[in-house]
Image 1: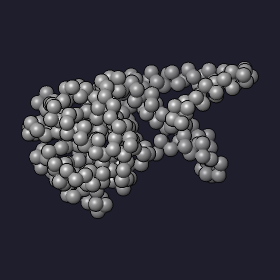
Image 2 (image 1 turned 90 degrees about the vertical axis):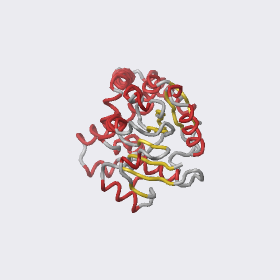
Image 3 (image 1 turned 135 degrees about the vertical axis):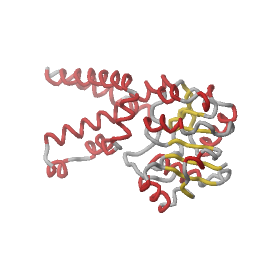
Image 4 (image 1 turned 120 degrees about the vertical axis):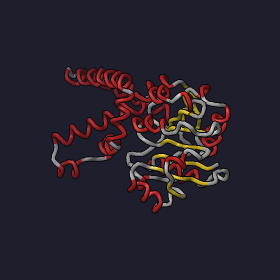
Length: 276
């Protein structure tokens, strides 16, 4: 298979590194609207070559590893691909993407969300094995062509990913709580501290807990603005429910209800029993 990746940042670049190790992948080409990203991708040996959109359309498999708003625009440029071509998006929200797929390429299209990444972005952030042992959610797969379903499953299996299947709307609600809300909290936490503390105090006193919680605030503003916009309703619900929990804890502390504070902490601690 000849593979093209549109978008050569963290997700696309890391995917390229992993795909190049698969024996049934003949070549991995790249395309990015940012010419500096294309240059870096070649210098870092992420892809074999850079190709234009017309050459992209001739590839057997096309991955879309770009922000959601750009992804929706890019799909229109792929109308006219061969009926056996497989197009796989890696967007972090799915409902609007699925609703925006042009009817001419609906069978070609597989809506996927690899639940992986780091707070870094750009080609230099690409890392090998980013996808290994991570979950990939495949949405509305029954609407994809049989050939495309087989190709997508084969690639993700070979990458060592764990496949889950669900509808796009269900995915977006889960993602709001598990991925999107934590990013919103991290940005807000970072802004709160920077508005109250000077640089020297932050450097001197910020310990592991703060660094861990604020780490996500390093993530790409362009990408996360897109995600917040696309998943607005679900994200607002998640934030409001988080605010309810935080207000409850605030009131317990204010009223010296330390038994309730202890109970609240104990309840939250149970989350990590799921992972252990």
